[in-house]
Image (cartoon, rainbow, N blue to C red):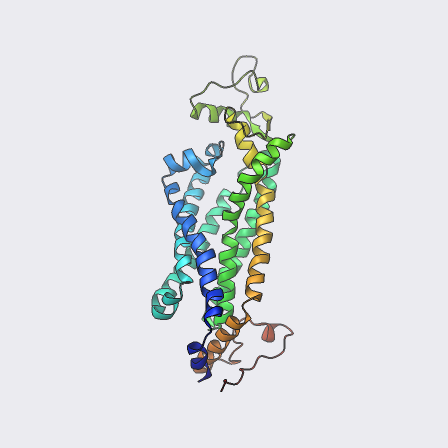
Length: 329
């Protein structure tokens, strides 16, 4: 069969681009990041003291549904990131197919649970008005990653391996947005600090909680609006917090990282969406090879429209009908 010929004569250069490049750079990055963040599962120590290096988040996540949601999110998305890296290792895909399948279904389940937990956390309002930009970006990520794993699952059920690969790659790139956004956020925080005139909005209760956790007296002189005439805290009152990377003022340091995060997240989402489509566009030979494999498997399984049994453009769009090419001599 021509598929056997294709598998045996697949060019080394193409294999480096389609398997090594994606596996080492992207899946490897996901694996490394996920392993490095496993310590966050120690919620009351590592996560509390070091989450994103941003003061202020613990106010929302120390108890209640946000704590439950974030714990579930971390406990599912970090293992998913580790397992996802294994899916793109060629020897596992070819030699240990059963493990590849079980691992794939496990990843899908973990991502879906993680997205559900992210929806629980999403409504928190750290930072005031700028939080809406982050909320919409996070909600969009939930939508596109859920869609990605659903499309990958449907296509593999239909033995449409080329489209399964494409949607798993898309999902991996989408999930990797959080890694890129952290890097950019650490760059943008000092930039907006130097530019000045960027402010967040915190409640006096958030400020009081922050300083109590730091075992530091509440700075009444800087935020007199937070103190009632009888000396008690006006907990629900909101104050403007300047975004400035000052370690001596933790609320300002936190604000400098919180304020740009929404915009950074949207930029990274756009970069990752564009990047994965460029990558898929640069690897048409791998897609064609896998589509030929799909044709053989679908033909053997008795599917109608072999080669196009899944979600393909020629069956569901206006592309020319796909037909298997002749084997090379």
